[in-house]
Length: 67
Image (spheres, one colour):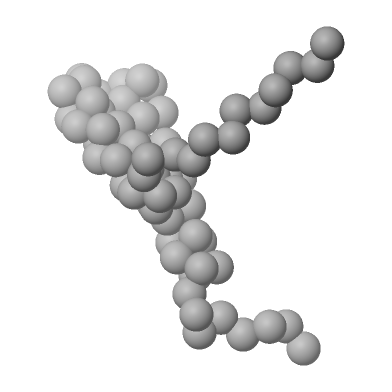
C-alpha cells in the first residue's frame, strides 16, 4: 500500500518563514557567550539572510530571462 503525500500548504510564505528563522536564531545567539555555538548560529543567520535575498530576486516581477 502506498502512503499518501501531505499536500497541505504552509501557513506562512517562504520569505516569512526565513525571516522568522533568522530572527529566532539571532535572538538565540545574542544569549550565548562567544564561542563555536554562537558562531554557528550567526552563520545560519547570514545564510538565512542570503536565502531571503535570493528568493526576493528570483520572485521579483522585473526578473529578466537569460539571453
